[in-house]
Length: 77
Image 1 (cartoon, rainbow, N blue to C red):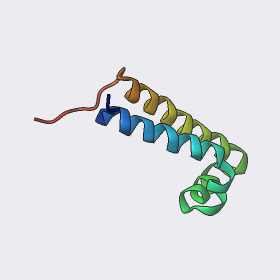
Image 2: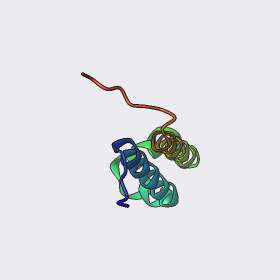
Image 3: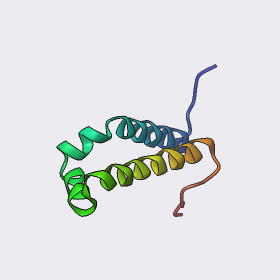
């Protein structure tokens, strides 16, 4: 029996994995990317880390919900 992923499962899983990677590498992201440096400028170093963590946690939840089929993307016909 071949293993088959739907498009939503693939995209949701990818978003989940990339968000998890970002959450693990949050300090690196803030120090080495323009967007991370901009977050640090806007919020300061202490708040920027929490803003970034919230963004990545939101991505993880969204990816999990998409992969599990609870939410569905808009489909244009």
